[in-house]
Length: 209
Image (tube, rainbow, N blue to C red; front, side, top):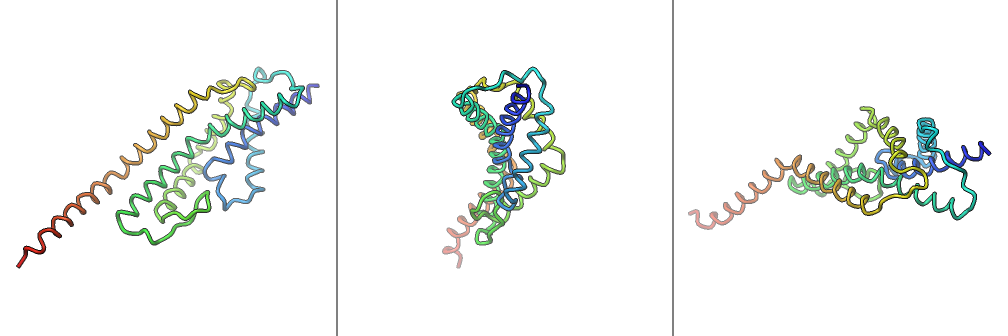
């Protein structure tokens, strides 16, 4: 009975962790084989499971309906943990699109990162740089610890406050895009001033002898 409880606990931890890996930038890239992503999710699940206190574990699930409900809740929580980081990478892509549009490099395509759609060169550069920093600075270890800490806020089977989650995601999305606008402010201001000067020169040109 104890072994069955441990297997159920690990399976639910794997569900939450695997949905994080599915959305986490870097591991969810289309260039990474599916087997590598599966092994990474299993390794993350083992690490998170070993970090969990024994007080988190509850009684085994008996019915199939309760198990399916727990799987859905764990998948929703796992996706909500990785969505803010996904929003940050989307904001970086948006910044690259703005800068490329203003400097006139739109026809040059970049390498798609994480999806099969074409993105610009600077967007690809920003995303690759962010992925390298995510793995090289040790932030991935903090993400594993964050998944383990999430069980103190959202224990197994406790559900998730959908309204608070949506409010937090909307706040995170707004903060990321405000940060991106501040980072790209020099290019945006330069482009606006350049367009104003170009329009002024265009108006004055017919009056020049």
